[in-house]
Length: 184
Image (cartoon, rainbow, N blue to C red; front, side):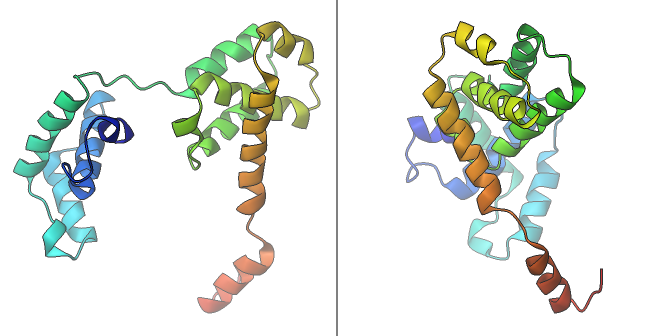
């Protein structure tokens, strides 16, 4: 969706139609197709405003417009492949370090990092956090990469700030349960 709006205007393409069409197109590209009729059904179920209820025909027409806007190029790079290669290159065979790094990458999708930084820098930042957390010294390996460590550390700080800002306290959980009249 972001790539569409780097080439086309929001006034030209309605975001309420672009969003489900991009979801439909992405599911096709990843070979886990969602039927257009089911997508339309759930949009209608979730959205009560008649003005923004789209039909299958409109989604299929917008699919072609999106493909044209993207020049039929649907490849999107994610940090996962890079992370696996970097962990292997660093000689890290520790499963807990791998799982922690992978989990950190998963959580970066809740932030806007993927829109701002290249995937390899996000992968490096996740490895950096995991290495500090697991007390693995891979500073020599990082130095050999010839990567600006200030950028990697800044991305790491953004990830850690995310965890700090979105930490859910026991008090908030208990308050939510009390509103539901539920005892954990």
